Length: 369
Image (cartoon, rainbow, N blue to C red; front, side):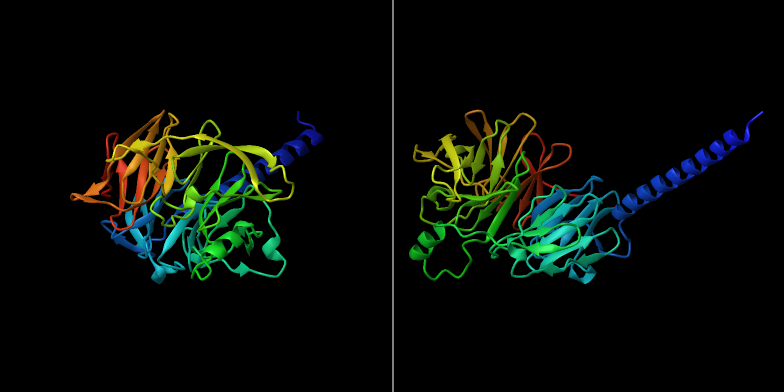
């Protein structure tokens, strides 16, 4: 015979189980719905038209290809679809793609940041004030954006508010201004962003080197050869990468850098303390050692670095050797922008004018959906 107390406990337990099951079901439904694409949005296409600068694979293994002023492509189990400003995208020129912890997809453009929740696009409003631009924080779930190439600092999104931050002044600014007094662009403009294994954020600027924010301090690193090519042109700080040994590679293969704890011996200089060692070069046609400047870099499961140049294909660092992979389409050199490693370790290339390419184990071939 069941006592009244046991009967009461059983009833309470039953209701708790029902409530918990309902909560779990609602959470799963919410997460799944984020990734369901509305069939009423976008245009189904058969190929990527023109360039696709950036590539991203979300947590549901869908691919996103950021167009070079032609919108963003989604490649999923239903095929290839193109989203543009006509669908609510804030700009057709997409320069970055990210995903938040809830599965929303965010697009970084020169016109602003927009969010796609699986059903619609919405613009994220920017909050700017005299004090907020110095409110640097580093939270694990925050998203960071560039919003173009010519701002004096990045944008931080905490899930509710998009803050425009400003870099602290670096002494290299005076050197730059004295050398180039009337440049039409911002030398602090953010060309690339990178999060290292410790969680610190790195920002590559157009002319003033690289800035690192570790959650407490903001410090700088600058060397001429990282942003100026041997021919005298300005390359900009376009790529940052930490290899599996903990060394950092910046823009070219001449050196690799070990970042040391603390600032330089002169306190409060705002400079990173580091030491460098020789990197790896390759033999040019003249027989001399040259140092490729790269736009983007990833590593593979073996720790090899894959470095993308603008107009000279891809270089793979295998130990002390650089292996060259030309990238061509119909016999012509393809102008490259980025390299991306997907969830399965596959390597993809973003290009300026020729869609996307994928590595087949021997060479990079054009991706046909």
